[in-house]
Image 1: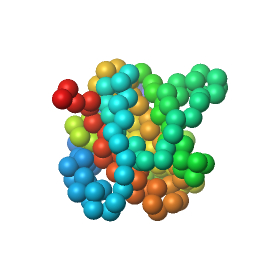
Image 2 (image 1 turned 180 degrees about the vertical axis):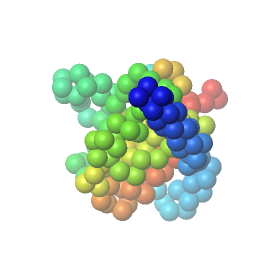
Image 3 (image 1 turned 45 degrees about the vertical axis):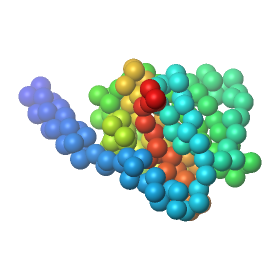
Length: 175
């Protein structure tokens, strides 16, 4: 029985490593021209506690967190007059935790789980089972994973925005 468990664990690790090697690579350079040509407007916002920055659409404002949200490690919420929202939640961890997290997400019914590389940062993206939200976990390379959730994923324009925002996540430049 122990031998079978060891074989299964080895196979699981091999599949996990293969998945990480097949990561979808996205960079800001790949979408910056499209962003400008489509007339979208926004600014890069630093998330200093995590050493990353990302593009935030014009019209999104920070919303005060409730005590319950803060207790759940919610870092920031942005809202566009109730039409769309972006949530930022953190946890301790690194990309080494992605295989276990992918399994946990799958067990909770999340779909479209895939490994990503965004501007050199490892990520794990997924969709909610109802298709209403998209999220990405990003390894901030400082002992934290930052989960960024975008909703509603049913609005085509906001989904395009979410794609630009994900592609813009990058380490804060020293310039």
